[in-house]
Amino acid sequence: MTSAEDRELGLAVTVDEEGCVDLSPLDPMHRRYLAHREPDGVIVMRPAAVITMAEYDLSRDLVAAFNAATESDVVVTPQ
Image (cartoon, rainbow, N blue to C red; front, side, top):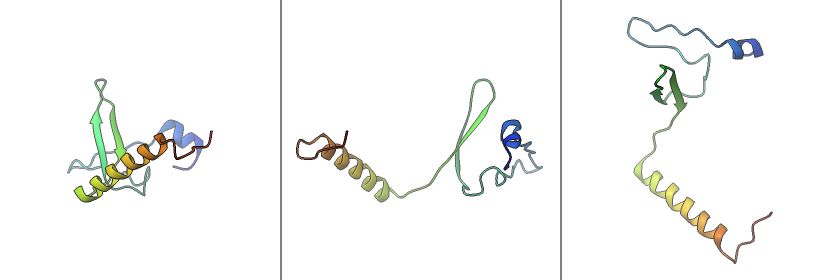
């Protein structure tokens, strides 16, 4: 979908006999999504990635270090 009209109207998605849909016209960069269904029936899908526990631990440690550094009196953050 490239035109503003296409984005506004959306793309008709057909479920095949195996229960699959092709999302590549909407988002060719992603192949894995987290999805949930809203109470009104709307299906929401967000691009997702699978990471190892080691990567998760490292990212959590990096966030904690960043937060500690930005709250430190030693580090001056631009206003």
